[in-house]
Image (cartoon, rainbow, N blue to C red; front, side, top):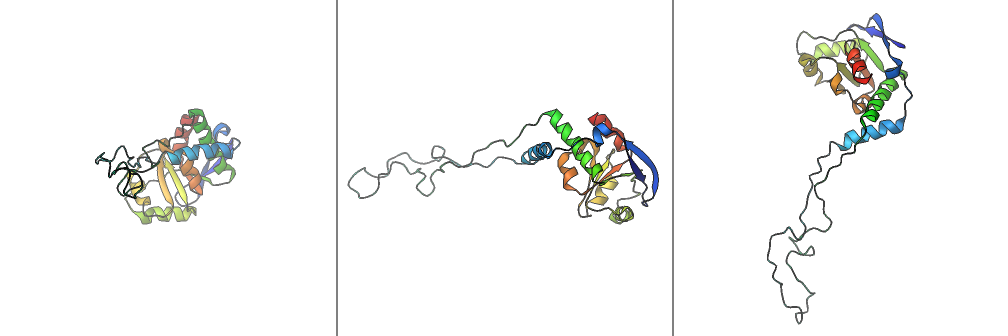
Length: 206
């Protein structure tokens, strides 16, 4: 098992925690990570873009003018795509961009993302991260002591004070262990786990 130092809010080492190899020390395959991240990103697309075909346009079906003798091209409908206000040829229609990824692959990718952070020495553990009040300055002071930026913080509780205090700090995001995902782990350079959240991660991925 890999041992990681547990820090306090002043950046001092207080203990060590062992991380199970089956979650935090597995071989990383970029193809698996790419597949899961792509699935996450395309699922954010709404897919509601739509246009009307000539059959959806409201208007008369009367022939505009007689077929011969006018010198004009033959025209049969005011709803023709060639005319202003007519239908659209091959326009977009509502669709789903979802890419389905098996549950086992998603879980494997999450383990790989965590393992990548451990191998790159970008995973840190803090014993507790509790703020007395909602104050950005207080959280910024802690992060400065830890010398961390571009950071994803993972907590096991829904800490409103922590979440609201982090919103005005650039490149810092707080999520619960239930929302831990591959895209966020890879998006941020550093990963900070509250020590109590490790057990939840073990339970989710074991």
